[in-house]
Image (cartoon, rainbow over all chains, first blue to last red; front, side, top):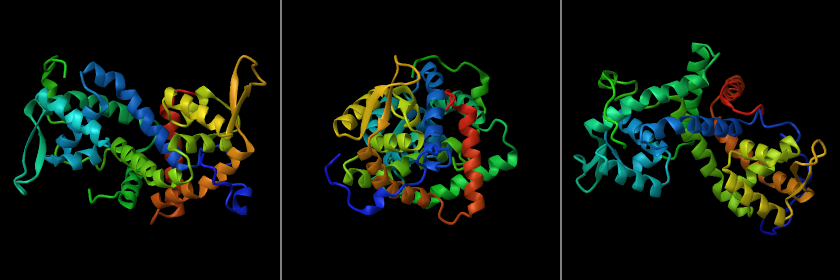
Length: 162
Length: 162
C-alpha cells in the first residue's frame, strides 16, 4: 500500500460489515454467484471444445444478431485482448465470420455462421441448466422480480447504451 | 471447436433467446453487473494503493475475522495464485499477518492488522458508493428483496458451507 497514511479521523470509526459478515453486501453476493456460475460451466464447455468466452460470443450473437467487436467485448464481458484472440479462433473454426457493416462500411461486424448457431444450440442446454440451478426453491414471481431488479441495476451502471 | 459434429436433431431447433437479446437471462445480467461494479472501483482502489483482490481481502477479514487462505480464496473470489501473491504483498505492507490457528495448530489463518483495519475503513466509502450506484431508483423493499434472493441463490450453488 502506498504510504499515504491515514487521512482523517473518520477511518478510526467502525465501518459497516465489521464483524458482521458480508451476506447483506450485494456486490459480494453478485461476484460470488457470477464466479460460481462460470465455474459450473467450465467442464461442460470444455467437453464441447469451447471456452467461457467462446460460449458467451455464441450466445451474444445468437441473441443479438450482428455485433461490432467493441459491442461483443462489452456484452460478452471480456478483455479486448481475450476477445480478439477468441474471435480469431472462432473464425478459424468456422463459428463466426467478420464482414463490413451495411450501416457503415468502415466498420466490421461479427456474425454467427450456421455452424456457430448449431454450436450455440448445442451449448444452450448447459447454460440453461446452470441458470436453473440458481433458482432452485424460488417462485416464478421471485425469479421475475429478481430479473426486473437486475435489469434496472444494469441500466443504472452500464456505460454503453446496450 | 473439436470436430464432434452435431450429435442430435435437437440442435436443429431454435434455442431460447435467439434474436431476443439476453435481457431476461440472469447469468448475463449478473456477469455484466459484477464486471461493471469492479471496473467502477478500479481507479479508487489504485488511488489508495490497493487492488481489487486486496480490497476484497480487507473487506472479508474485517467482516468475518480470521480466515484460512482457502476460505479467503473463496470469499474474495480469487484464483489461488492471485491470492497467494496478494497475501504476500499485504503481509509485507503490514496490512495482514498470518498465524497458527488456535483451533488447529497445523492450520494457518490470516487476520487484519490494525493498519489493515484502517485501510478497510479508508476504502469502505468507495465500496459503499459503488454499491449505492447499483440501487438508484429502487425502493428499500426492492433492495431488501433483491438481497434475499441473492442470498438464496448463493446458498443454492455454493460448494463450501460458507
